[in-house]
Each structure stands twice: as structure tokens, then as C-alpha cells.
Image (cartoon, one colour):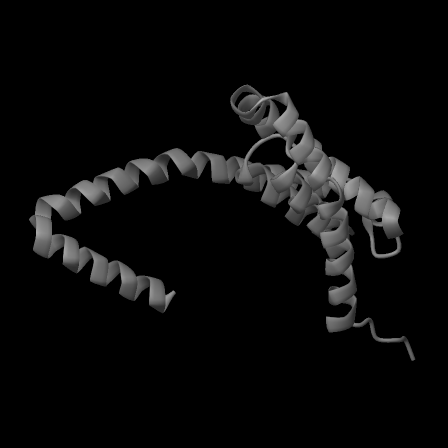
Length: 168
């Protein structure tokens, strides 16, 4: 936080020296408008995550996406990420909610990586019309194993970094 504060102060000083107070005021005005547009989305995403954490049955999520779910949990997480609509204001609160109700790091990593790489919403809205069908299908086909591999690696590393203590 200190580093960011120092960078902001240095940047503001440089803008002030180059453009004067009006340059700094223009940037602040633009940033406040940007913040005002983003704030409702962040709030909605956080509320969505909180409601999902309350609605989802913990036992079923833990069984389907938990540490003992194996490859099935990674595949479910990857499939869910691929079809999850929305941007980061939706995906990350949902991922946080899944962790809160019993999903493990591996399945959640598979979900986030799948949402990032495969996300059907972006593919349909942007990639197909701009890049064409061949490119989109090949890119998705090549990307399909990556979320599962990332989830498996995440699960492997997490288990070794934070081993469960055996009950005495």
C-alpha cells in the first residue's frame, strides 16, 4: 500500500509540474467517474458471492469439488468456469464463495483458469465474430486441458504447502 501511495504521489507531482492543477483535477474527475461506474458492479459481485456461499449446500460442494473429489472435481470446476458468464466482478466472488463452502484450491483454480481461457461469453461475443470459427474452435480445443492441469498442479502444491495435521 505504501508503494502504491508513493507512486500516486510521484505521478501526481509529475502531472502537476507538466499540466498544472487542471491536469490533476481532470485525472481525479475521470477516476471518480470510473470508480462510480465500477462500484455497483463490485458490490453486486460481492453480494452474489455472499448469497452463493449461503445458498449452496456445503456437503454437496465439498463432495463434488472438495479435496477428495479427484479428477471429477477438477473437470466440474473447469466446466463451470467455461460456462460462467460475466467478468471478474462475477467470477472472483463466485470462486471465493466456492472456497468458502468446501471447494478445494484445485477445483477453484480449474474454474478460474477455465473462465479465463475458455469463457464461452467472450468466445461468442468477441472471438467468433472477429477471429472466425476455425481460430476459435482450435483455441478452445488447445485450451481444454490447461484448466485441469492447472487445478491438479494447484491441488498438488497446496496439499504440500499446507498439510493437514493428523488428529491425535
